[in-house]
Length: 278
Length: 291
Image 1: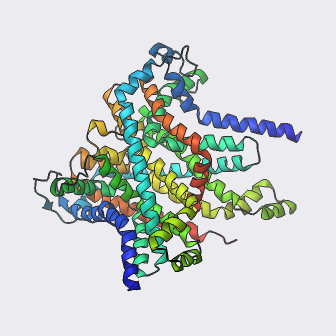
Image 2 (image 1 turned 60 degrees about the vertical axis):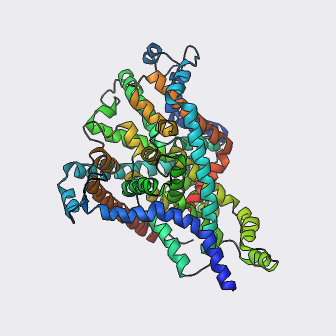
Image 3 (image 1 turned 90 degrees about the vertical axis):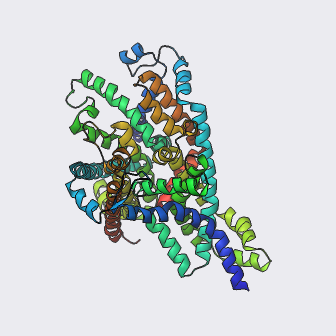
């Protein structure tokens, strides 16, 4: 009797999850349909799987260039965030003085600043650096990476800081006595121990940078520099919505996310949980 | 000597990040406060006119801003409630020892990964076609129609989509909280004859307070700052009926070219977000129980 009850509960739970994800199903099935078929019944399976709309959407979105830009910006930003914020957090924890406390508190306090408060002066500053100092901050992918690192520094330092505090100092002292430099101690001993929190930091930053729209929309003017959210935005803005084409475009943008999720699903859910509780 | 060496390492390890962080966050924040006291159209060649606190006082005469403030508050209250209720219910469902709970957990979290802008476009179609179809078929066309074209319902549409995005994320946080509750406390209450509802309200919920603190903080601040979903789902329409704070500020600065006035709004926005989230954390922290 209890067994049957559990089977029913199992089925109900899966049904709930399927209903929850039904908008994704709708987008997917309609990406293969022509207009007539789409308006006849948006919920039915397509009568044939033609990739015509995908090819068209790919071309109009400049999809390959967009995915290249998104990958470049996300990967490079996350590498810099992980390296720089773990180094900073370690020094802040291990040199426990007023300066370190002040720096750490500043990181925490700025987490409360919404992006909208900074966007206009930031753009002013970036174009003035570009124009006056000749450093190409504005309208370049590298400039966007620079800004990504700055905006994600607080949360990342905060997460590393909490984790490093729980690591005993004895190992480091032993290595120092053996003649290792600070650099050696950090990269050979500490950084490998940070693996779990590094996974969390990476996942949180990948999600937020990959999906970010506002900051790239303000910094990247050049059509060839557009990331995926940007090209999706212009794709929807430039063409009066042809829904079948739009569905193919949306499915395309979801595919990289699904691949990422499939590959790292366990780490993602664990990482998010740990990131939040810390 | 050793001390000097120590300082050099300290600088070497922290300076790169601090320089970037200062350039991207601290300096713009300070310049931003400065700009808020000027009237300026954003064109470098044009004069910035110092107006003192005038930008801040005229905020209260800007009806569109006040309207968006009211909408943002309404939207935030509604979404914080629905996201947390749905997220906690999901968490309770997938932590009951069912065989399908792991896969359900994976599926329910999925929307959070997709990103606000894309989600908005996906739901545009669902409201346009599927909601309308559903209304026709069931005869409930007073409830199921394209919410997004109705000024009153569009806001609920936004709450609906935002809940869809955030519920799985908040579920993960509640799961982490639920797993921290020791089993023997729950077992003891069962032996003492507590009903499931008593167990939930007297034991689970109080012990979940730390998770609640974080969830409320995350939902409050992200609802208050909502932009992407707002932009792609409704674009602030129809007739500005869903123009939230963040969008109003964007439109004031980059749409109307009122840089100084828009920046004053942005500063006020910061003060409100900071005040609300800090108050919430202070209140819920006090209610956390020590194990």
